[in-house]
Length: 373
Image (cartoon, rainbow, N blue to C red; front, side, top):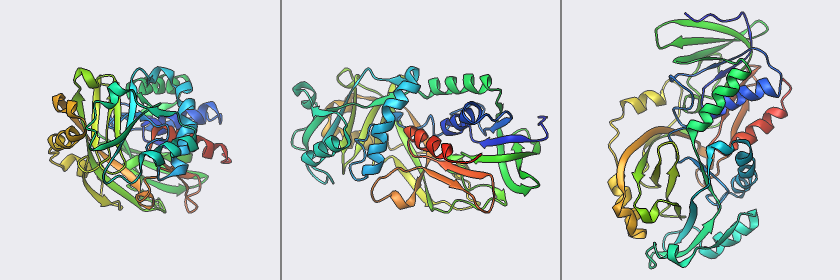
C-alpha cells in the first residue's frame, strides 16, 4: 500500500506531457517541495501524448485561425530549443492545396504563411511530380517537424526524479473535495486499494478524463467534444520515406514521420474520427474506447489519399493507434486549438488544463507564471 505525507504542496492528475511538464515547472520555477503526480497507466505518456500525429506545428495547419497559427509559429523554435533530442528534423515537409473543395486557395495559403512569418516556397519539381496535378493546385515546401514521445517521456522521468516528485502509476483520481486549509483528493489504484491525499493545489491534466471527477469538482465551464480516432501507422515506399505531407484545406489528410516507431502516421479528416459525443459527467471516455470494437478504416484512407498521391498505394499498413481526442466545441468551425486553462472559483486551489497541441505547453506555462501560488 502506498504511503503519503500528511500534505502535499500540489497534486497533478495525469502523467502525459502536460501533467509531467507542469509538475517539473512547479518544482523548478515555483519552488514546490512536495509534489505528487498520479497516472492511470503503467508509465508516463502512453495515451494522447503518444497516440497522435507527433507533429510540432509551425502554424501552417491553421489558415482559418490566425491566433492558433501565430502561437504555433512562436512556440516551435522554443520547443526545438528545449527538447532538441526529441525533435526529428531530417525530412522534407510539404503542404499541398487541393483544386476542389478546399477552403483556402494556393495564393491565400502563401499569403497566410507570409503573414505569420512561416517559411514557404514552391516545392521542387521532382516532389511536385508525386501529386496528381489535376487534383492539386500547388505544392509548397515548408518547415515543420515531428517529435518522439519516448524521448519526451525519458526527459520527464529524469526531471521528476531530479526534483523528487513522487509518481504513482496505475492510480486514478476519483474525486476532489474542499478540506481545511486546501483540498483533499481521493485516489483509486488498479490493485483495488484506495486512499485520500491532502494538498494545497490540484492540477487536473487528465485530458479526456477532465470532467470525470466527483466530490466538489464542478467540471469545466466550456463544452467539450470527445472523439474516438484512428491513426494508421504505415511503412512508406522509398519515394515517400523522407517526406511529411499535408493536403488541405478540404480533403485534408496528413502523413507524418512517427519517430517512436520508425513509421509514418496517416490521418484523414473523414476517416480518422470513428465516433463522437458531447462530453458529460459519468460517461468515461476511456471506458468507451475500451469497449469500442476498433474496426480499421485504413483501407478507405489509403484509397482516397492514393487519388492525390499514387505512391501511397504502395504503403504497407503495420498498425493503428486508437485514442480519445478531446476538443473545445467552440473552436470546431475554425479549427482553432487554444488551451483550456481554468481556475475553479468554487474550488479554490484547483485548476483544469487541456491543450490541443504539444507546443501549447508554453501557453500553459505563461498562464501559470501569472498565477499567485
